[in-house]
Length: 453
Image (tube, rainbow, N blue to C red; front, side, top):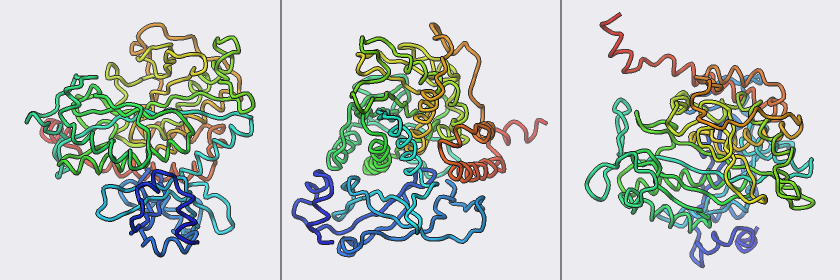
């Protein structure tokens, strides 16, 4: 393939970034189970002469700690999978010293079938289930994260960063413009990097935590937006490093502060009519809208392990910290796990507030969309709307990763939708991480148990 041929296939923003300059390097990447970018970087001169490359499929058996999990599917032979570029994902890496593009690749086995354990393929699988019904899911994610001071010693607590005023960022300043200005240079770089990559930011605001920021993305195709979040996490980390701080997407990085969520707004379009199926032709709420809420209520417990994938994730689910503790639903009610925002009939949607920002974006969107899909197919009605404070209701979600994985293992309908091979591998990776965590003795245990029990 000639340089001209492949440049004609990439987005305009990537072409504008190159703009006549010599492209030095191409990063060929896939997201692993944790959402970490894996792959190869190669000289552009080599990349343009091949349409695929190989990588062992064992990357989907690697835990967040870097440990390799025993293959639950059988012999551990590490066969190569074939990675092919999705040209629509080509985007600049403007923080690098040379001219570099990143391209997300799709993973196939050597017979040409999609690798079922690849998170991007899991999301595509769910999308195809919708398409088979004549539906098109529309999503709009919100991204919350913390800017924190550099933390070089894991034994030390994470603290807020120093702002331009010379004081550390303060909490309880939600929506404050002056709070955002404290780390304005980081925000400026986020905007610049996003523009170079052709991404549309719907808005940036200060959240309730010290140094906590929220970025809203415009609604659209689920796979496209998952790719954006995948890129955004790296983009934001790079912007922070330029200004002597870290960006973290941990669900709960700072004790006493709110956690970081990835709220997922979803509606469903009828592909034939272009109409939002959550609204009737007269503009009211449709039965399908209620079925979708019921699907989330009935099946979200089974996918909490995907939406809250680490032991730290469950520290976020506490009352009165802007995080849900149950599966209640309500109109314009932020205490519920499932919120129906104010909107026009064409924009009627459900906001799933349970996902943490630490989740793999492909799997987080796939899990939430799978719940809605099952609800639309099962045609059950939800529980009555919560009209008050949902925090005083009983907790309906698991308290820890082990319990969440048990629920994940038990829901046959969800496993069929997500794919049994993926579910087996995901559970193996997460149970291994949980086992490793349980072997760690925490400072709390040493402080309170060493001499007192």
